[in-house]
Image 1: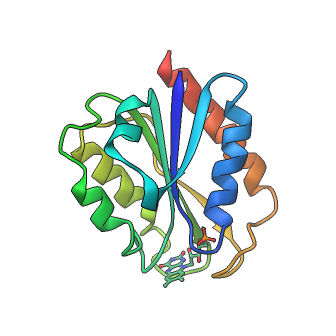
Image 2 (image 1 turned 30 degrees about the horizontal axis):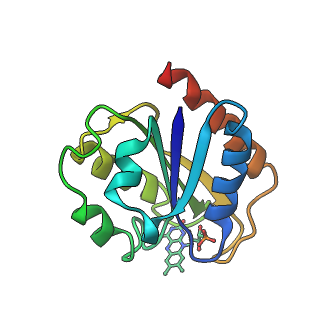
Image 3 (image 1 turned 30 degrees about the vertical axis):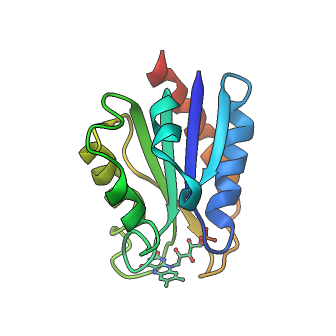
Length: 150
Ligand SMILES: Cc1cc2nc3c(=O)[nH]c(=O)nc-3n(C[C@H](O)[C@H](O)[C@H](O)COP(=O)(O)O)c2cc1C
């Protein structure tokens, strides 16, 4: 089984979670962590499970991410199990507006099958660091996603 974790991270916190999730998942699968900017349609097509993570910016998806998603062909991940996560600051107003929710909609547009609710992990401030326990929480969350691929 091949798992793709595609991640956009400006200051490194969202990427740190991706790497920690990959460590947890590698016992059961081949895991590729690919920076969002370098992701290709082929990376998407080869995956049995797709996890997309992004920093939340301006209540949604950062401007660097949106054009890449728009370039991917409709139906390119038809039926592939997908989950999304983001990092965000807990105390920001409108904190229910997150990148992961918007990413989920984009993946559904591409034909992906959403297997979990969008997940947020929290940082202390714009540049981080991650709140205590978030790395472990991300690893547990990622492990639960495996059950949807069998
Ligand atoms: C331009 C900009 C806009 C941001 N807007 C939000 C926001 O709307 N909501 C929020 O919770 N955090 C916001 N943040 C904080 C980011 O979520 C934080 O920088 C990110 O989680 C850190 O992850 P990274 O290290 O992977 O970039 C913003 C940060 C930047 C730089």
